[in-house]
Each structure stands twice: as C-alpha cells, then as structure tokens.
Amino acid sequence: MILSVLALFLLVALEVLSFTAAALFNRAIKQQDMLRGTIRVERLISDITGHVYFTNLEWYDQNGERILSIPSGDFRVRLWDVITHHYKSTTIQELNIYNANISLHFDEAMRLDFIRPSPDMKKMQEEDWQKKVSLEGLSEEKRRAIGEARRRMQQNKMTRRWQNFNATGKKIKLKLNVHDSRFEILAQHRHYLMNHVQLMSSIDTTKKMVLAMTIGGFGGIMIGDGITLNGHVDFHGEDVPTADLSAVFYAVDPSSLGFGMNLHDKMTLDAYFSGPLTHPLGTGSLSMDELSIPGLFFTNVRGDISYDNAMLNFTNVSANVFDGILTAHGDYNLDTRYYHIYGTGSDLSAAKALPGSGLSCRVAMDLMVASDGSSKGTLTSGSFQSSAGRYHMLPFEQITGTFHNAYRDLRFYDVRLSFAGFNVATDGLRIENGRLALSPIHITDKDGSPLYTYVHEKGNTP
Image (cartoon, rainbow, N blue to C red; front, side, top):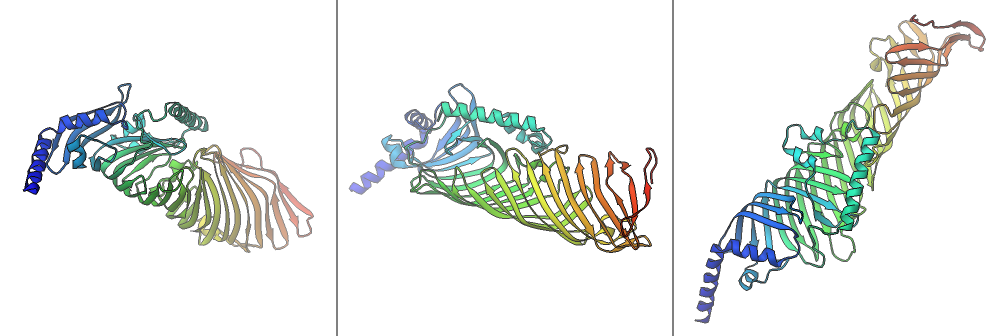
C-alpha cells in the first residue's frame, strides 16, 4: 500500500513537471550562480522521465550582448532535484545541443569562460570562410597587431575573471553531446575556428573528462579539412588538469601557416599530446603525398614532429625529389610564424631538375631556409656539388658552388666547372626578376693560370 501511494505521488509529480517546464526552468536559472547574465528560451517541453526539450536558447552577458546561441537541444535532469526544488551543478545529467555557435576563452591557467563571438566567428557560415579568417598573406606588423589585441583582451578578461561562467568549487557530472556546431576558441593568444563539430563527452570534474571529437573544417591560425580528437583530461590530484589526447589534422594548407610561398599541397599531422593543459607536449608525424614549390617537386614527404608551447619542430624528414633523396629538419613558431628548414639532398638528377637544359649529372646539396612568414622575408641559401657528367656533348668533371635566394633575386657564388684540362669559374651569377646578370667568368688551366676572362655587357646574353 505504501509503495502504491509513493508510486502514485511520483507519477503525479512527474505529470506536473511535464506541464510546468518553463516555470521550473526559470526557477532553476534564478537559483544557480554558474551562468551569469540572462538566459532566454523560446520553447520548453518536458516529459515525465525528466527529459526536457528546448528551442532557440540564447545567453546574454551582463551588458546585454549575446554570447551563446543554441537553436535546439535537450537535457535530462535529476528528478529528485526537480521534485525538491533543490537545483545543483549536477542537476543536469545529460545535454544535447544542435547547430550551436559557441565561443570559448581559456586564460593562462586554462580556466574556461564563454565570450561574445568575434567577427571571424560570424563569417563561418559564409562561402570560403577559411580564407576570410586566415592570417595568410598578412605582414609581420599586422600579425603582431592581432597578437597584441588578443593579449589585451586576455588581460581584460583576467581583471574580470569569470565574468560569464564560474564553476569554481562546483562539481559537474555530465554527458555532453554536440552536433554539427561551430566553435571558436581563444587560448594562449591563439585563435581557433572549427566548423561542423561533433562532440561526445563524459565529464566528471572530480575524476576526468573523456571525449571523442570530429571537426569538418578549421581555420584561424591554420586551415584544414578536418580534425579527429580522442582521449581524456584528468582532473584528479593535480592543480592543473592534465591531457592524454590523440589528434589528427587532415589536409592542412601549408600556405595558411605562413610558409612564404603559394603552397597548397595538403599535409597530414598525426600527434599525441600529454601533460598539463597549460603547457602540453606533443609528438607525432607529418606526411604529404606531394609538395610542389618553385623549381622543386617532392613526393612521399614523411617526418616526425614535436610540439612545445609555440614551437613545432620537424625531425627525420625525408622526401623523394629529382630521383634522389632530401633529408631535413627544422622548426616553426606558431605565434610569430618564423621558421627554419635545414636540408641535405643526395643523388639528385640534374636532367630531372632542369629538363631540356642538356645537363646530365648527379648532384649533392645542402639547403637552409629562414623566413619571417612572408615571401619577401624568406631567404634560401646553400651549396651544391655534382658528379662527373655532360653538358650536351661536352663532358665535365664537376660543378660546385653556393647559392642565395631572396624574393626574386637568385644568386650563385663561387661557381666552378671543371673540364679536362681547364676550369671555368665566376664569383657571381644573379637572376633578378627574370633578368640575368654576371660577374666576370674566368677560364684557367688546371694549374690555375688564366686563359681567358669573359665580361658580360649590359643588354647582352652570353
């Protein structure tokens, strides 16, 4: 009998709940102090199981600016909390949201806040949005100005800590599912934009957060077609949560990283991140099927990567080029977009590199590239040495020299061609904006005695 009465009481309470969802929601919003500002919902419907469905939920900050928009979603609540009108941070047990716009900010301690969407966030629903929000092509001064603006914003956030969201000292235990939504993240002065986000996550702030995430297109500090992210964040026993995450970045556009060239061959980055969220360390690999830059065409590019703060380091990189092999290492700074590449080429085919030139030999070379992230600020230099070969029908023993390339100004120095019985040398050969300029060419015998000197006159081509 007692059980029957209790069951009847519970059914009546749940039936009342199904008709008063809006009133209960408003009461819960007034009682909570995690979400500051004003939350408005166009429509709420609940059932007797504690499942609540909503449409057009909007969250406004204390200045009346909209910081979150969710067209539709649903959540499941703890029934006892609803019946007793005792709402807590754990009252919502499961949350599903669809087609939302979510802008997040993480401070230096990786504490989360919701913020107003940036103008870039609003462009994400436009055609070709990735190019419109990319740093590609911006000067160093403009990139630094953007960085300074983000630092000022972060400093302002620090003075108004937890302006919109405050979970300090509160327990959250929630299953969160996000469907086909857009994310904007500001963290450590960097800007990330993500489209078509699918997220499944189980959050328990006393233990850990487990997540599986896919992203269909990203922009901001770099452009790509997709990301998969899987793993967990551990909240237990540490002042700062620690990461254990695996990520794959698909079809990354190298030009969006500021490599100073018109490079759009797609790159894949596969990485594992671990350590505190404030300073995670990453290791992994990179791969490109093809890489085409002026004068060079690489295939089967493979290498290792490591990540530490703003620095992305490349090691053990190898690629096929001109029937030979190039090995390389280097570094890239995500904040400044400065990078360095150091490479060594072996057994390269001059005939493949210069088709139709009549030059046939094998070449070894050393290469160094330094860039400030712009075409004009990219410098390439190195040295080369050939095997014996032929120039058309003329055999030679060796070609050696050094080179320096700075924005349409390619120069060769100390170039020496060794033939049977004599040598040809020049201290400077320069190609600037497609025009050839030569220093005197000296022809000597094997003992170094001069035989002839050719001086290139302006307007003539040897």
